[in-house]
Length: 117
Length: 112
Image 1: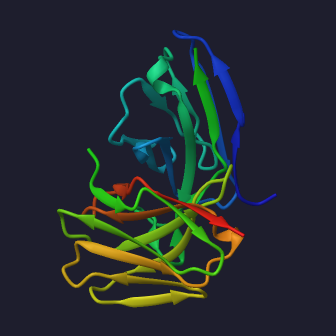
Image 2 (image 1 turned 120 degrees about the horizontal axis):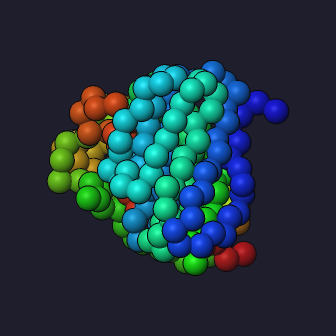
């Protein structure tokens, strides 16, 4: 199906473990983004990517790593999970750099709920 | 840190009532966006505003880009149960790639 899909939908992991969240989009959008959503904070940008092999940090990137070897995939890795990384993670894609065009908005996946124990 | 101040944080209303929420910033924005997040899903764009003073409607939703470019308002008329969700304002700071800031959201509950 066309769209943007995230996996897994739910994940429980232990402190110190490495965990990777997957994101796949079928639109061939150049730009992809990772946000985390926490109560009282809204959505905060973790990382973004302008194209394959081009990534840059957002406002809350510490403890996270991304890669983009193919345009359609943008996995997010927590190298050593901490309790403060318990959150809902959203991947998004867009045709435009900032996702502000009405014809090229951010398209979000349905999120991954991650719990770090 | 947080760039956009969104209020109210939550609203509990009865079906049929009108709703108003707003977003303010200490900085100027060139674009204001309003997203809605249904329970268990990702946010979806409702309305985009590109010019100071602009008033745009999408069905029962109306949004305005403040004259000062530091605020925006979203109104929902004659609310229905499916309006339940979290509403976010968002805007980019300058032309920096990927720098789309989101407000903290307004949680809307509609009682039948």
